[in-house]
Image 1 (cartoon, rainbow, N blue to C red):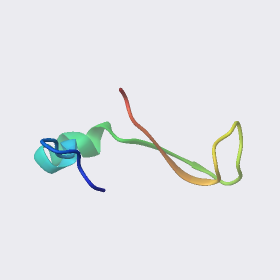
Image 2 (tube, one colour):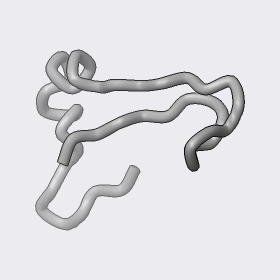
Image 3 (cartoon, helix red, strand yellow):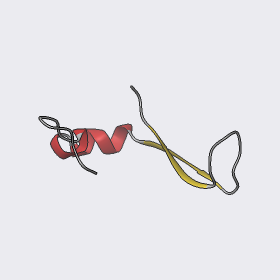
Image 4 (spheres, helix red, strand yellow):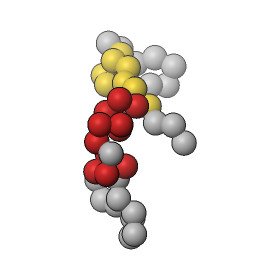
Length: 44
């Protein structure tokens, strides 16, 4: 993933916290507009 100028991924500075706060759902089939497979969630 390419960072924006002057920015860097949160996980590169705080890997432990990023790992604890990552949420992923595995869907066996597409549903509600989400594709099948691993789908990650981020909080903005």
